[in-house]
Image (cartoon, rainbow, N blue to C red):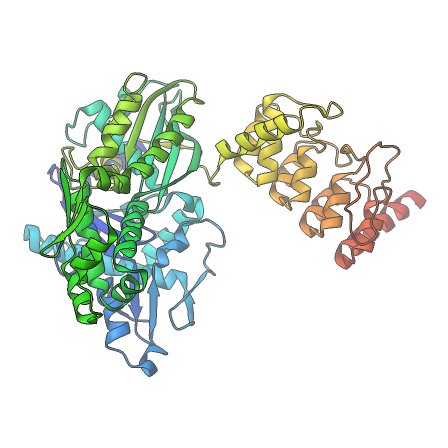
Length: 624
C-alpha cells in the first residue's frame, strides 16, 4: 500500500486546495516541487480578504450561471420578479456543512424563492465552478494547461470542523459529480474533514520546521503523549481543539469545544454600534441596505487600520456613508452629528472618522479579554500541555497576538499563525492542506463526530454539586461515572464510549439517576444502545425506584423503548419501595405505575402496543 501511495504521489504534478467555509471560500495551488503557494489571483472573483462569498445562482434547468457576489448581483438586480421565481439562488449554503445533522444524499437546500434542490447538486455545481476557475487561474499564472490532464492533479477539500465524517463522504460524492475525481481514481481526491486539523498542521510546521519548506516531515519530530491546544479565532466564533500525539505518532483530537466568545465579527459589531450612536441607527440601517458595497468597504477599511502594527489615531474612511448622510438633507451635517455626540476623542475630517487610541481599543479589548479568559481556563485543566497554537482571521490583530503571548509565554510554548509568518498570504487551513498532501505519513486518529462542549458540562456538574452538597441520600460516584452521566444527558456518543471503555459503570446512581436513565429520558437512543450492548441490566432503578423503560415510555421515546424491550426490560415492573415521590408527573401518572401503565396514561399507542406484544410473547413462551 505504501508503494502504491508513493507511485500515485510521484505522478501528481499539481496540488489544488479548496476551503469550503460556511460563509466564504477560497482556493490555492502548488505545482511540482515548487515551494511557492499561489493563492486565488482572479481579481474579478476575489471579494472579502481574497475569498469568495458562498452564493450560487443556477438557471431554471439547474445549470450553473454564477457564483459569489456576481450571483448575488445578477439575481437581485438583473432578473425580473417572474424570473426570480424560476431561477435558484442560494446564499451562505455552506452552513449545511457546519453540522453533521441530516447531511445525506437526500438533503435538500432551500433557495431564496422557497424552492428546494438536492444539496449534492448545489455543492457539485460549486465545486465545478472552483475546478474551472482554478484551472483558468493556473493557465494564466503559469502558462501551463492541465485541462486535459486532470489525472495529474491532487484535490484537497477542507470543510468545517463540525461536519465530521458525514461531510467527508458528502463532499467526496459531490466532487465525483463535479468531475474532480472518480471512484476508480479516488486517490486524486483527499478530503480533510476538519478545518481545525489542517490549521493544526500549519502550526506544527511553524513549531518544528522553523518555517522551512512544507515538504518537511514533521511527524518524525513529534513526541508521544504531548498535548496541544489549537485555538481558532475566526470571523464569528472562537473554537478550541485539544490534540494529543499517540504512541504511533498519529494525531488524535481529544476534545473540540466552542468557547463562549465571539470572533472578529464582534469587533465589527462594536464599531457598528458606535456609528449608530453617533449618526443614528435608522440612518445606518438605510445606508447598509442601499449601499451594500459601501458598507463592506467601510468594514474593510476598519479592519485594515485596526489590525495594523501600531496606530495613535484610528482613522477609518467612511466617505460613502458621509455622502449618503449629506444626501438625506436633514438640516444637520455629519460633522455636527459627531460634535453633538460629545466625545472629544472622536472627530470627522474629510470623510475620515478619527478615533484616538484609548477609545479605539475599546472596540477590540473586550473581545480579546474574553478569548484570553476562556483559553486560560482551558489550559489549566489539561495535563501534559506543551503548546498553545492560535490561528484564524482574527490573528491578523497584533493586539490579540501580543495578549496571547504575554499571557502564556511563561508556562507554554505559544505559536501564533498570523500574517507575519513566511506564508503570510496563505491561511492556516490552506497551508495545512498542502502539508497534508505532501506528507504521506500524517495520520489522524478517531475523528470526533460530536462537537463536544465538555468544559461547560463539567462546570454545570460542579455547580450542581455545590447546590446539592447536603443531599446525602444521593450517591456521589467517581470522576468517570460523573463524566458518563453528563455525556449521556447531553447526547455525546463518542464521549460516552470513551468513559465506558475506561470502566465507567452506567448503573451507578448519581444525583438521583443513572446514565442509562438520563439517556432514556433525553431520547439518546444510540447511547442507550451502547450501554445495553455492554451487558448492563435494563431494569436498573433510579432514586425513585423507576426503570429507564418507565421514563422512555412516559416521554414517548419509541426508539429507546424498543431497544430496552429487546434487552429484556420488564414493561410490568413496579417499584417495591422508595422514600421519594415525584409531584410533577402529568396525565395522572404516579411513581407506583408500571412502564406499561405510564405509557397508557400518556396515550403513547405505539409504545403500548410494543409492550403488550412483549408481554404476550413472554406469556406464550411460559405456557409452552
